[in-house]
Length: 375
Image (tube, rainbow, N blue to C red; front, top):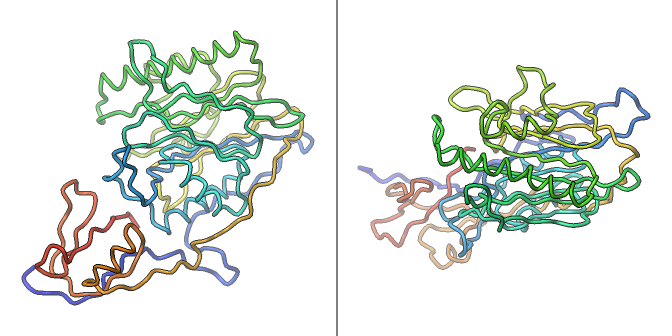
């Protein structure tokens, strides 16, 4: 920059405006739980949401997470609001860094889940699949070490959770995040791997049935491909598609290059009956995916367990204001949200382009790296 600009560099994101009753305004909200067509029929609500890089603000030395920005306070609160609107009994999530950040998100919900599960998978960046449940998790079965057809490994994991819904019986839930495409035109290597993972899901189901596991089986999440794709064809031929009845104009979970696509699915096997399904399309979502909810008729009223007490620890967060030249104070707030005051000399992109380097003097030590966000 040719001249110095004196300004207050505020490294924060504004929280949603609050109405008089304390509710956030200016954001779309998922519709409340709809009344059943037959009030006597118990309903089980399953949902899935790819929350796109739900990372914490700590460096994990065992994964390449340095190039991914953590979500801001605003984005985490916005995720919590969307999840509250889903009103799910069981929620599968994708792109979660660890169980700690998932538990942190859970405590921000108006109605936190009593069971929060995540098993570390194989992804190099550390993104995993997680589960939030209002029913006890009887067992968690990871298959991240399994070799698939073609000698492929599993991109993340194929984990199966057995849930006890009470008198209604048990449910087998397999949250997935299959291998992503590397370009808009597709990639032969990623398609082969995704195809192997799809067949791997069916192999797991076959093994469960062979060992007398009779409970209904549900696999849901981000499959990274379309219902009519070659890679997913074995799944859609063998299992039932719970979202096929969603109206065409609303039956999408992802928008790429202006095109609406359904790459998130819920497929099931067993004695289940879909009584409702919808994708939730809201403005200002802190994710590139749209969540969905599927309602199943259930044999008996599901016995949901109470969760921990709601704790909105970020509603009145304190952000210290620090002079840009006060290196000691800045180091104490490493990876935290702060307000920095000083004379800005220049702005540079970091080598990977994901963050910004703010220079407050010619001395390179008098600078800070900030995480960029879409809000």
